[in-house]
Image (tube, rainbow, N blue to C red; front, side, top):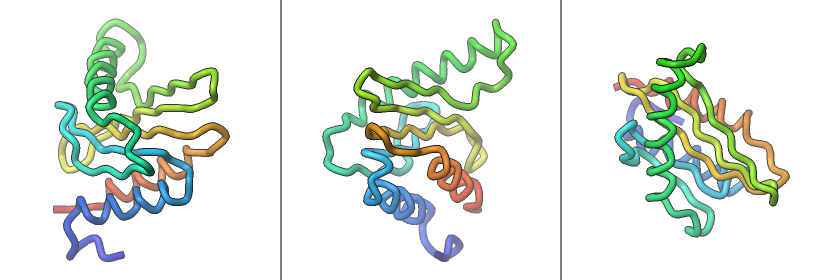
Length: 128
Protein backbone atom coordinates (compact mmCIF):
# COMPACT_ATOMS: atom_id res chain seq x y z
CA UNK A 1 0.00 0.00 0.00
CA UNK A 2 1.57 3.27 -1.08
CA UNK A 3 0.73 5.88 1.54
CA UNK A 4 2.77 8.57 -0.24
CA UNK A 5 0.84 8.85 -3.54
CA UNK A 6 -2.76 8.15 -2.45
CA UNK A 7 -4.85 10.59 -0.41
CA UNK A 8 -4.60 9.95 3.35
CA UNK A 9 -8.36 9.49 3.68
CA UNK A 10 -8.40 6.76 0.99
CA UNK A 11 -5.54 4.85 2.63
CA UNK A 12 -7.13 5.02 6.08
CA UNK A 13 -10.60 4.10 4.84
CA UNK A 14 -9.22 1.11 2.92
CA UNK A 15 -7.75 -0.29 6.15
CA UNK A 16 -10.97 0.52 8.02
CA UNK A 17 -13.08 -1.32 5.41
CA UNK A 18 -10.75 -4.31 5.65
CA UNK A 19 -11.35 -4.52 9.42
CA UNK A 20 -15.11 -3.97 9.04
CA UNK A 21 -15.36 -6.60 6.30
CA UNK A 22 -13.43 -9.06 8.45
CA UNK A 23 -16.16 -8.58 11.07
CA UNK A 24 -14.17 -7.12 13.92
CA UNK A 25 -15.81 -3.70 13.71
CA UNK A 26 -19.39 -2.79 12.83
CA UNK A 27 -18.25 0.76 12.18
CA UNK A 28 -15.14 2.85 12.66
CA UNK A 29 -14.68 6.60 12.42
CA UNK A 30 -11.75 8.94 12.76
CA UNK A 31 -12.89 12.31 14.11
CA UNK A 32 -11.17 15.60 14.75
CA UNK A 33 -11.53 16.85 18.32
CA UNK A 34 -14.22 19.18 16.95
CA UNK A 35 -16.32 16.13 16.01
CA UNK A 36 -15.76 16.37 12.24
CA UNK A 37 -15.13 13.07 10.54
CA UNK A 38 -11.82 12.52 8.77
CA UNK A 39 -12.37 8.91 7.64
CA UNK A 40 -15.00 6.21 8.14
CA UNK A 41 -16.19 2.71 7.27
CA UNK A 42 -19.43 0.94 8.22
CA UNK A 43 -20.80 -2.57 7.82
CA UNK A 44 -24.49 -1.83 7.32
CA UNK A 45 -25.12 1.81 8.15
CA UNK A 46 -27.08 1.24 11.36
CA UNK A 47 -24.53 3.18 13.44
CA UNK A 48 -25.39 6.87 13.72
CA UNK A 49 -22.18 8.81 13.04
CA UNK A 50 -23.65 12.00 14.52
CA UNK A 51 -24.18 10.26 17.88
CA UNK A 52 -20.64 8.84 17.80
CA UNK A 53 -19.32 12.34 17.06
CA UNK A 54 -21.32 13.76 20.00
CA UNK A 55 -19.98 11.08 22.35
CA UNK A 56 -16.42 11.66 21.07
CA UNK A 57 -16.83 15.38 21.87
CA UNK A 58 -18.11 14.51 25.34
CA UNK A 59 -15.15 12.20 25.97
CA UNK A 60 -12.75 14.83 24.63
CA UNK A 61 -14.07 17.14 27.37
CA UNK A 62 -13.81 14.33 29.93
CA UNK A 63 -10.24 13.75 28.78
CA UNK A 64 -9.42 17.38 29.56
CA UNK A 65 -11.11 17.13 32.96
CA UNK A 66 -9.25 13.91 33.81
CA UNK A 67 -5.98 15.70 33.12
CA UNK A 68 -7.02 18.76 35.13
CA UNK A 69 -8.54 17.19 38.25
CA UNK A 70 -7.20 13.66 38.29
CA UNK A 71 -3.91 11.93 38.04
CA UNK A 72 -4.66 10.68 34.52
CA UNK A 73 -2.27 12.30 32.11
CA UNK A 74 -3.60 12.42 28.54
CA UNK A 75 -6.37 9.82 28.66
CA UNK A 76 -5.66 7.24 25.96
CA UNK A 77 -8.87 5.24 25.59
CA UNK A 78 -12.44 4.97 26.83
CA UNK A 79 -14.11 1.58 26.58
CA UNK A 80 -17.86 0.96 26.94
CA UNK A 81 -19.48 -2.48 27.00
CA UNK A 82 -23.18 -3.28 27.17
CA UNK A 83 -24.92 -6.28 28.68
CA UNK A 84 -25.23 -7.62 25.13
CA UNK A 85 -21.39 -7.57 25.02
CA UNK A 86 -21.28 -5.02 22.20
CA UNK A 87 -18.51 -2.49 22.71
CA UNK A 88 -17.69 1.04 21.68
CA UNK A 89 -14.17 2.31 22.09
CA UNK A 90 -12.81 5.81 21.76
CA UNK A 91 -9.03 6.10 21.28
CA UNK A 92 -7.36 9.51 21.61
CA UNK A 93 -4.03 10.26 19.94
CA UNK A 94 -2.15 12.75 17.78
CA UNK A 95 -2.07 12.49 14.00
CA UNK A 96 -1.67 15.02 11.21
CA UNK A 97 -0.28 17.45 13.81
CA UNK A 98 -3.59 17.56 15.71
CA UNK A 99 -5.50 15.54 18.30
CA UNK A 100 -7.89 12.98 16.81
CA UNK A 101 -10.42 10.45 18.11
CA UNK A 102 -10.78 6.95 16.70
CA UNK A 103 -14.26 5.55 17.48
CA UNK A 104 -15.09 1.91 16.80
CA UNK A 105 -18.26 -0.11 17.34
CA UNK A 106 -17.36 -3.74 18.05
CA UNK A 107 -19.84 -6.63 17.84
CA UNK A 108 -20.14 -9.14 20.69
CA UNK A 109 -17.33 -11.66 21.00
CA UNK A 110 -14.96 -9.93 18.58
CA UNK A 111 -11.44 -8.77 19.30
CA UNK A 112 -10.46 -5.21 18.57
CA UNK A 113 -7.25 -4.11 20.29
CA UNK A 114 -4.79 -5.43 17.67
CA UNK A 115 -6.84 -3.94 14.83
CA UNK A 116 -7.13 -0.61 16.65
CA UNK A 117 -3.39 -0.56 17.30
CA UNK A 118 -2.62 -1.43 13.65
CA UNK A 119 -5.00 1.27 12.45
CA UNK A 120 -3.46 3.85 14.77
CA UNK A 121 0.05 2.94 13.54
CA UNK A 122 -1.10 3.33 9.92
CA UNK A 123 -2.67 6.72 10.64
CA UNK A 124 0.45 7.89 12.48
CA UNK A 125 2.67 6.77 9.58
CA UNK A 126 0.91 9.00 7.06
CA UNK A 127 2.91 12.12 6.32
CA UNK A 128 1.83 15.27 4.53
